Image 1 (cartoon, rainbow, N blue to C red):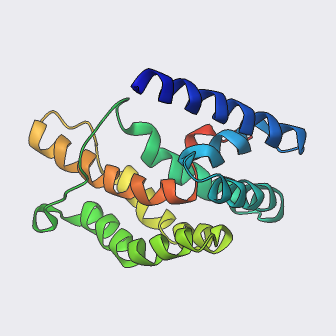
Image 2: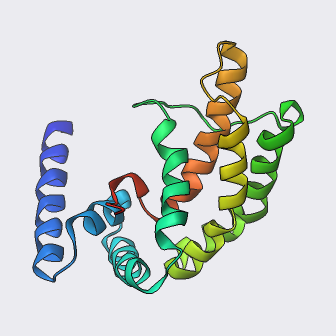
Length: 173
């Protein structure tokens, strides 16, 4: 039944969380890595990469903050399908769309192969487009069609970011 599956899933996630904590990983790294709890091997790779990247890369914080801007603005429970009419996009919207489309397939492959440090490097190339987008665009535009278009674009980008981690869970001092 659904209830028993949910209970088992919660139990297993809690146990995996505890195991990772016992191994010395930070709480935020664990939560960010468990974005895809269905694959513990992938989550382990994510977490190990996050631990390395957070300490070894001086640009990690700035890139993670840019990526989290995309994920944080999406309304809680927003289910947009990420379908975007590219011909409707212009300026910074189009630039973000194009930058994302240029890396999307490669990001899928890197995630599938467990190459999370390389995936971070790839996602970091989106930072200038993300920064320009948020500097020039009011996502929550009063025009519902404009707002929906922008949220759909961000949802599309968020799906790719989540291949790396749930960046919203990271503590970025």
